[in-house]
Length: 274
Ligand SMILES: Cc1cc2nc3c(=O)[nH]c(=O)nc-3n(C[C@H](O)[C@H](O)[C@H](O)COP(=O)(O)O)c2cc1C
Image 1 (cartoon, rainbow, N blue to C red):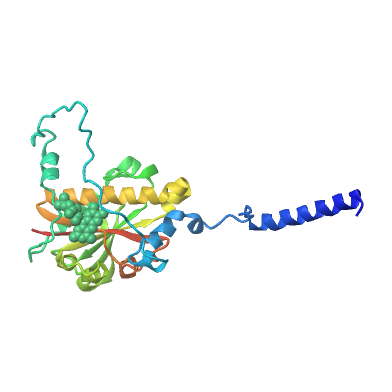
Image 2 (image 1 turned 90 degrees about the vertical axis):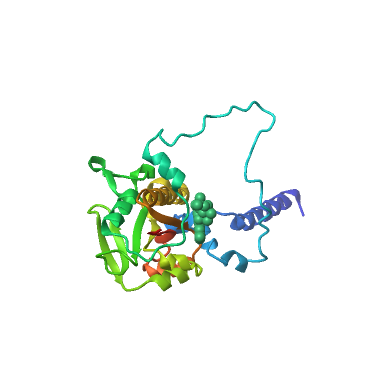
């Protein structure tokens, strides 16, 4: 083969090889993925449903429990004054008193108390900017709040949505949902005995359009803020609260007719008279 012909064939082969290799590359897509498809947080959300990880191969090795506290034993240590209940007023006493309570008395709570709890969780505290009791990234408020009411004076049993703007409850389902919510929460019976169970869900797109890949972080952080407000408000009202993160996502979503994709349940807070 003469040198010119060999050079031509060599070039052709390397070009073909290059094309084949390029087919394997994650070639940029001309059509951007749908927001839900691009959102890795949402994929993680699916994967973290109870039992799901086990179906995808051998069970993960989650390691052992690390020490509860971090400490620097060899550096200077400054003893702080003992926290005083008087400093900071009532809030400090409430924070000290808050405990996760799972035993509730068989007495109703009032609609006034329920209203206070909802206001503490999501109420509008600064009407000019429609800002709420709990902070929200970009004031986008992705969290929705639902109430499963079991023993509330002057309130029919059922599932309600808290309409923030009007400070009203919208009844989305009537009836006794105690067994259903308790079963959805991995059979944790105390949730069925609570006067009310709050369910916090997220509408991811409310945050996603602006904060993109930070979305999943932000919605979980915000649910935490709201749940803590609920727990502290319950304590301040002399009620008991317990946050609950263990539940079958699909069952809880189904209870509220959430699609689990655009809007998904994230957290339960059970509240009852103690
Ligand atoms: C994210 C999260 C999920 C939790 N899930 C549950 C739960 O499913 N069931 C339950 O009984 N308690 C649950 N708890 C309550 C913890 O068990 C409780 O906060 C912990 O024992 C510390 O007690 P304390 O809240 O009284 O300080 C949860 C707490 C958090 C923060």
